Length: 134
Image (cartoon, rainbow, N blue to C red; front, top):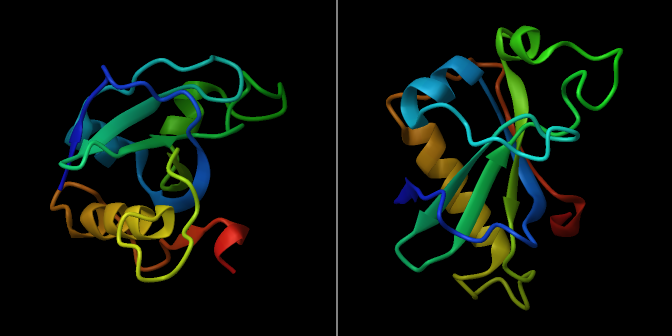
């Protein structure tokens, strides 16, 4: 189980995976996203699990903050779905049995998101992991 926690230090979190879902359902479930760097990221949600492990969910280079050819923030947020990036700062797994490894953390977050009654996902929505896990 994860909970929103904007008081955690998200420094050092980087992309480990993604989940395609609808912005509106994220906002309904978790509230307005926290402001980010206003360059590569327009908004983000920070989560913490009971072990103190941090996950961030964010749009990455998705708006005209990054590139004028991309949609405005409001146009981006009106899209049917988007592959939101999942960031973490735990080190990569040393073996598959380490339940606290990053891959397992990301998997547990994705399962929690998919099981959420608030998050609207379509049949076409997917999840993915960083190439570190291939």
